[in-house]
Figure (cartoon, rainbow, N blue to C red):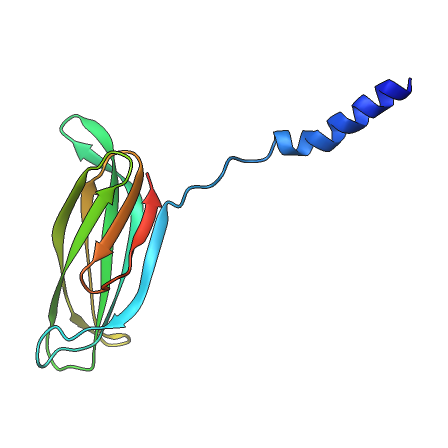
Length: 144
């Protein structure tokens, strides 16, 4: 009877671990705002984010990443354009690619001069490292 109680106790102590969720992969990442000077009359700040997204390729859906920038041109009387280059590398497959993302700030009475733009990349499944030219030395890492 004591052996049975010991086995039951061991099972009871181990049971919660059997139901524990698997390790969580990051499906989104972001970079905090940094100062940028898009042109002599357009300054401000830009932040970036990346997230896992499905990508339509012909008649099928593939794994991909959406990279977005949020451009705040600060105080300016007009429109400012900021272009950053997004680079991605799939650490599992060795695949890579890049593309430009251009945000045009427009006046928003409440928030000032803001712009938003994004691009989607077919990256395949794996761990993806994304860098954007506005944030030298920084990276976003997500898993598709």
